[in-house]
Image (cartoon, rainbow, N blue to C red; front, side, top):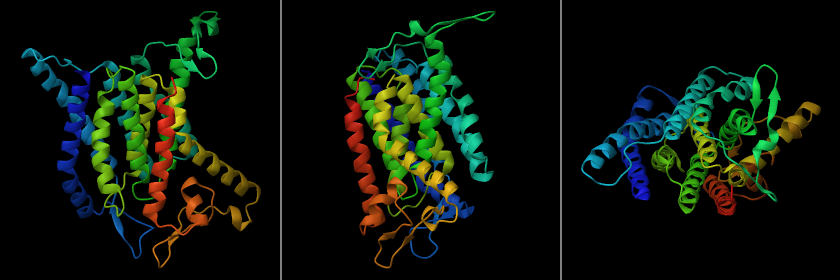
Length: 350
């Protein structure tokens, strides 16, 4: 019956987002909340901050669906009476990251702040979690009791506490920033996020543990609608408010399900993209006058519709650097790559 409830949650969020999306896009255009699409000819403008739409649908669903579930429960229909503490904590984490995304859109908060401040945003979820024995490759379940440390005047710091209060916030922050970086083309970020979120729910279902997946289900439904309007040729983009919030949702979902290593596999294209970008930044710092390492944010579109990119130093630019490909082809290739790693991650124990 949990799978029925998850499906109902997902469909509710999808319906809300589908009803609100055309109105939201129109209103954003009326208010001139638009940004230029650099990979379209002319001065094409897209509605901005579409992450608000995704969060709105997910938030309303998480608030309203438990009320419906309670009514059905009173009618002796066997559905959960309410969501878990982890569900509401995950929603809080996403809202905090979304608020931070608004600040980053309107006030450049800087790279250092993007690393340090978001660590605090994970603590609503940290407090809702209990300890667990993480799975480690080539070792199996790791007994965290061996890492207990006695601190004079404080007491014993257990390995489980260090995992929850240190590793979990860092993990969520890293995933959120990885998602924020791997974007730039129509449907790239939203499509990859939808694939990863869907596989997290599928893996949780296969493991028989869907109890705390209601916020994730609501996010999947809303993200599916957003992807429909964000895919090529896009009418709306997510903005930092969307990419950071959805990234935090993915990181939080992986933590809730204890899929730390499986999540690393699913996010491998994002990790590779980050490493490529870091190499680019290092080489630019070492050789600031060399045009090969010049920092460029956008490429351009040729007359035949194919992409001309400045280098091969981010993952999305590798294929169009060597082959004549249009934006849609590049995005589909990135989706396929994410899908492959998600299938591999599906079979990783934790």
